[in-house]
Length: 569
Ligand code: DON
Image (cartoon, rainbow, N blue to C red; front, side, top):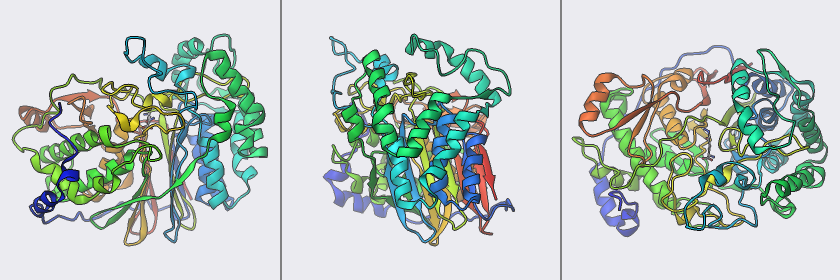
């Protein structure tokens, strides 16, 4: 059915080794960075000014990067409810100043009563609304357990100290940003639809400078502060979640909550030129895909060709096409599916995969009906933190779509995710990001749904170099990839690399999505003649990243596409 398959390597390693010899010689990008000049003791970059301030205050108080990360995660649940969460999940990548590495998977899981065909109607057709909105769309939340585990292992301040700032924001209120005024107002209809009869959460009319107090959420945070994990997965909050599920026909049970455990996983490590790339293994697809993308382009002279030049765009698009094809068939929860990780991240494999592209003509993703182009929905969130000692944390966390399932837990004041849509609901049926999947990512009780979130840390010469990540659904992987290339290959500083326009290809639909004005008309015309189809979109990604400059200062990159804020000291 597809012109690109991912099985060549597994069938014939010898061929690959021979082919790989054909790719030799690589150009190394040189680095010249702007010295932002101010911040040597630490930095926080996150999606909202109030959450960045919470993180910085924790660092100044003597907390380390993990303390600050836990505080920021909880603060985002209060001030940035579209993606910050208690009712969702995420991934953390950690690197200590001395080079100790850890990755934590606090991704949601399918409830015990979930089943493979739960989103199919009686004729076997996928009913995507059910996996996207309402009670059935929610997986068992992982964020609170994740924060507890991260803090137990690496935290320095007390648990109460890191939870308290979020509680204060919920109880005393915080100023909403101008873009939130618009967003909260637009949200009314859906909130009413999926929360019939509930009066709490988001009031109808908002004005600039309004302060928002969330007392139910404050009570939940108080329980989390005082009882840790049990403040959320047992007792009052578990009762509220159960009652919510019963009232709305959802599946999450108290047993599911009791059983939920986030998981430390072996960090995924690769190399790109002189850089070591530390990233998230499955249940993220992002880490494997990022290493594959870097391996695929490593031997092309990108810096000589230039940023967003026709040759660069062509090679990057062809790499992305092939890597997303692999994602669709080979990646899923490693606790349930044997992911051929070591083959996929072997540089020889990616070089082999790039052998068959033709400079004269776009490779076709071929023969199938196009899936939907990804929607503009930047509602996952990423934050990057470095502390005084140089410990670094990269966290991406989400409810999936903006405001998740739209269901808020009555009495507990938080929203539930719609992460079940990240499973492959039916082979060949794209999810909300147009991504395809199969057996590897089918629904099984207790299984985690595949994610594109790609929190990543880079080292150079054994030293911290970059902390990076972004929201953006399927575009996460390409945005992280292109941000890294912008710094390493195209000599951009962190902020410029974040600001730079991105483009994206995900195998299907066979379209290059490009940010408005992102490509020069001549470049675009040239590539269109070769068969590439472009579609413009307003924004791709919201990267929040930190670069350690060669002068030892931290340069933040806070994405201007949102309210993202960098704060250092
Ligand atoms: O884990 C994933 O890949 C998705 N749930 C992420 C969703 C996302 O980034 C939405 N915001 N843009």
